[in-house]
Every structure is written in structure tokens, then in C-alpha cells.
Length: 199
Image (cartoon, rainbow, N blue to C red; front, side):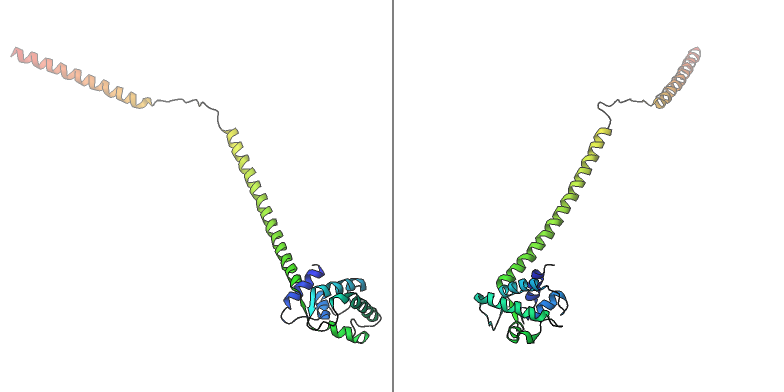
């Protein structure tokens, strides 16, 4: 993460009690050992003065060039020693930076805007991923429907009606049996009539 964004995050986390310049730098790097190059810390210090305020401002905002010069000399004096940010190089500047500093409102707003931007980027990436998945599903559905159209039979369909002749054959056979029985019955009636006439 960018050191300036992280510094704003640390400043916002300590907005109630404040934080010293030195504690901020140590929290940025996770160690009280020297990790900044002199030029990098000089640049960070100028940014710090613009974005943090202290209750007891010994230097006015217009005097940032003067304090930058004194800070550079402070860093030069510290670069020769075995410890980082020694008080005895410039006790006055050391005391000024060792007081509690608070993140300015404008810097807080910038940090919150950055957080919102990060959230927007995450949301946009998520939306893009879901859109890609939706497009893939839609293409798959189009492919399936195209395949089903191609593989379906062509119109008009040929329809062959197959009649069940077994029932018809059974009815015909039954009909023939009834005719025979009827014929026999008629014959018997005739024989009976003739016998009755003769009597």
C-alpha cells in the first residue's frame, strides 16, 4: 500500500488521541529502525506538514521551507549516528515533532474518497465478472437452441396410420358364426312348420 494512504489510515485511526510524527513513521514501516532514504523522508515530511496539524504549532504554514531546511539538517545529523531520530541533534524540532498530531479534515476526506474508490473498483470488477458469466451462459443457451433446431426433423412429417386388423377379423368371424346359427335356426323353424302342417 502507498505510504501516504497508509499514513492517512493511521492518522484517521488515531484521530481521537493523535500520533507523533515519529510514531507515525515507525508504524508505517513496522520498525523504529531507519528505513527511509533521506530524500524520501524529506518528501514525506513536507506532505506530513500539509496534512497533519498539532495543537502547539511552533512553525506557521508559511514557514514550511524553514522547517524543511531544519528537518533536512536534523536528518543529516541523524544519518551520522547509530540511532534514528535522535533528540540531541535538534531538541526544539524533535519536541515539535514528538507532540500529538492530528489528520486534517481535507486529508481525512481524501482517505475516505480513496476508500470509496477502492470499493467502487471492487464492485465494478465483480459486476464485470458476473457480466462475463452471463454472456457465456447466454452463448451456451444460443448454441443449444441452434443445435436443437438443426437436429429436429423437417416438416411436413410423414404419418403412416397402421390399422389394427385383429379386432376386425374377430368381429368378422363372430358375424359368420351368428349367420350360421341363424341359418340353422331358420331351417329348424321351417321343419317345424312343415311338421305342424302335416299334422
